[in-house]
Image 1 (tube, protein in one colour):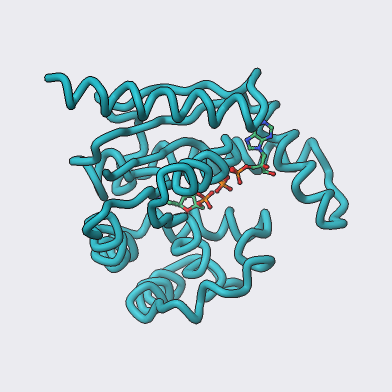
Image 2 (cartoon, rainbow, N blue to C red):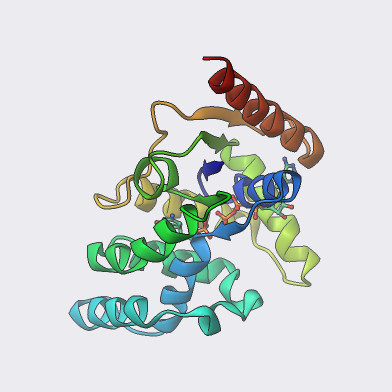
Length: 213
Ligand SMILES: Nc1ncnc2c1ncn2[C@@H]1O[C@H](COP(=O)(O)OP(=O)(O)OP(=O)(O)O)[C@@H](O)[C@H]1O
Ligand SMILES: Nc1ccn([C@@H]2O[C@H](COP(=O)(O)O)[C@@H](O)[C@H]2O)c(=O)n1
């Protein structure tokens, strides 16, 4: 079974995708980490042709060793960098095969990102599009960063999340929109446990419907 989980920044898609992977005992890939690793590789470079060339080279050279520094990869600034390299078509192309192969493992997989249901696994058995309002997303991300001992400027964080979402949604190569056959799950008013229960109900319901048809 392939489960595709998409949604905007800090919507909780990673939390849900990893919870689904545990529940169904499937391998899990956070595809945002790949873009974040490419973003980190070009950190400090000025945007322009050199930046693009370096990002493409980093995407082509990406391997597991680039995915180990979780603290640097998951920093808020790295998310912004990731969204800048994600608008480069050659970067997306270089990262496609790894994601597609991950999705096609024999027992299936759970992947989360922006273009999983539309581009990486349009054939997924179940597609979820996770939503939560911007204020809830900002608050969740703020608490996540504060739990790491970081000081958070909520006003700046809110604008950073909005700016990243806008860039992602306007990305001509990103395929970031809800697939027609994706189930929308709004978690604004749900805690993590309730959101996971709702996601499992959608997956079970979809699979039961397929088995019955
Ligand atoms: N339903 C929820 N209620 C409250 N907090 C939540 C909920 N879902 C996730 N969180 C918390 O919000 C934070 C962000 O969640 P998560 O990392 O899953 O989001 P994401 O959409 O994968 O983010 P990113 O776009 O950066 O990859 C985490 O600290 C997580 O524990
Ligand atoms: N499938 C994907 C995954 C991510 N991106 C870009 O990377 C940024 C960081 O992703 P997170 O999921 O870790 O927030 C994101 O803002 C996108 O720009 C992508 O394009 N496609």
